Amino acid sequence: MTEIFDAIKKSAIEIKNLIETGDTGKSTHENSTGDTQLKLDIASDEIIENIFKEVSSIKAIVSEEQEEIIFLNKDGKYLIAYDPLDGSSLADVNLSVGSIFGIYENEFSGKNIVASVYVVYGPRVELVIATTDVKMYRLINNKFKFMQEIKLNEKGKLNAPGSTQNCWAPYHKKMIDDIFQDGYRLRYSGGMVPDLHQILLKGGGLFSYPGTTDRPKGKLRQLFEVFPFAFVYEKANGQAIDGFDRVLDVETTHIHDTSPCFFGSNEEINRVKKVYKENARK
Image 1 (cartoon, rainbow, N blue to C red):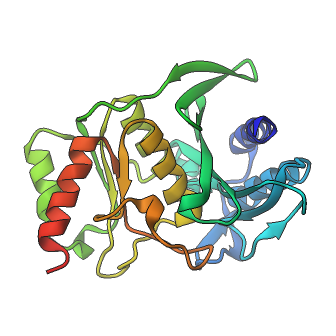
Image 2 (cartoon, rainbow, N blue to C red):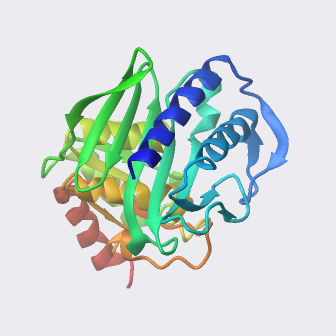
């Protein structure tokens, strides 16, 4: 596993340099879900794939930017699903973006995730590794230095409500409004990595991306985004659910499946469970 973490650190440094000097414009290509790829997406994807090809313990990889699984080493132990540059559309206005990695064994599914890593490219580059615990590192003089272990409080103060509001279910809207009435502060950049990172470092809160009338199964991809962060939040003493159940128990039928998702500290997630149990399945 250490060689995988080292490979991700190497890719993070290269992607940092790419963001600083690369073209933030659109390409002529679309990814598997029909989104127009930015040139940064494609270049970041190539950086990670080329570095992972040199790691013998990796059996296969799959990127959010590609259609199929790529098999690397038949004797490898690990499968990696990654989003090379989450929130890349924010780069041209100089907001924080990130990379997300889910590390799996045997097959790509929530029950088989064994570690996850994400990187935040902001005013500082920070990298978080979740195994049995959650540790944050910061890029200083081109090397990642350990900074702190991350633990969530039982209750937080931040609320990051995602997706198109006019497509929310009425009970979901009321829940979000009630949370704000209780004194929670809005923190939402439109980037999954910086918003979830902020909740982790500030001790807790709620990030939500529900199923909506236009996207009943949500927008965020299970293997590349939802499962890796679910693993992080659970190891940091929080929870991650789909509104009802632990999100890592949700079945994956296709590598690009999506899922509604709620990440947070225990009090906020228990609040979501109560609201959804009372309303969503009526």
